[in-house]
Image 1 (spheres, helix red, strand yellow):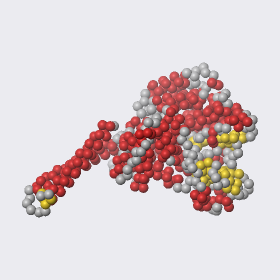
Image 2 (cartoon, rainbow, N blue to C red):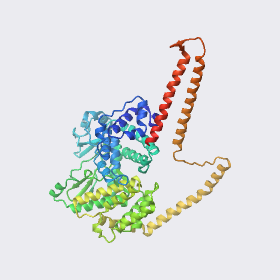
Image 3 (tube, rainbow, N blue to C red):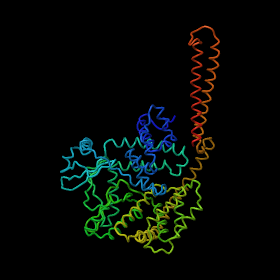
Image 4 (cartoon, helix red, strand yellow):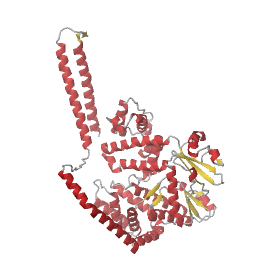
Length: 564
């Protein structure tokens, strides 16, 4: 049953709320096709549809944004994840997703006090020399207060909202089930990989809710950027940091979008743009561990043309192989080598979902070739990456989640750089570092290390080969060799057969009741109803009700197939 498919009874209230919000925002058809409406109505829930007609007049991207905002923190975070998926959504959708924010009313200090006592071991006024009761900022997951330690250090205290984990986990359970149903029942959504998106959202939220993990990320990036003296990462005060709370150094600087103040303070804006680009490129290209959300609110400019990054709840990771592929892609774009770009993107896109790979390759080559002869200073690397993802989207291909996050970071970085310096060009900053990293990969020592690792892996595989073959032959002799074959939609066909068998069985029961009641009607004596034998009358009535239910069920099933 759908109720069993969609989850336990504890999630019914939230499911009712989600379905009601979607219907009010004009997505009633999606609610019906996912089976939410029927499941909730059978469970006794009534869906409210007030204002649905007014909201349905809005453009679909606006409807979706408003619905996500109304549904709360998990869905706002989902929209923020989708804002980085230019390979899946067009510019109008990305613009609306980018407008999503998690600013919510702050909780009063008294609502946080019990949790703070548990995490700090005492009242906040006793642990800190000064604790500001009014927060600096409040979001859906946590809120931030300013404080001063007993040694005089100015800090910010980030506190996770009480009970937020339970809310998020309930929403993720529902989203996982709905994504599975959407992939099975709505083929047009499969290229968007809804289950993969939900998994990406779950990973992002789990990392963001662990405030101690955020501090570990900050320290790792601080260690990687230690060679750049102009970069500053907030220092962590571990004695007060736990999963639900962290305490970090307070950064007093100019926020990244306050360009007028940057000018008034006399900072060197072109130099800030270059330094920010060098820091992010180092994180991505050299370290493979980068700040995945470098928007202006997370960047501060400091005296001496220094730069500080804050908020490391969202970070990206790139394996060594991914970094090699990224090097090939960026060098191909910067040096106008279309075949190199096409090869990397086709590997990244993976499953083609029926796309014409030949046509896709031709379009990528034509796109890159149009920049042939263009001076390096005129290349907009961020825009080029955005255009490439547009080509993939038009062919209904999606990038892996880690690469979509990377491209979003690149585009945000170039936008910030151009805000500081209209003459900033990411390609000029990237090319020297890309060449340096590429040269480092082909030094004798690097080549020797890779060759040794490859040889060691091959020897290990060869060593295990006799045991693997022996095990396979032994299982074959015992008849235990198993071959797993997955057939698409087989479960759906089985469910349809099951429903058909149930209807056939019910029809046979109804027919038996009619025949039996007819025989009872001929028997003289016994109790009567309305002048007819009571048992015969009740049998006919039950058969009539069963027949009406069966006809209604068949009609609704046929009506749905016609709509689909």
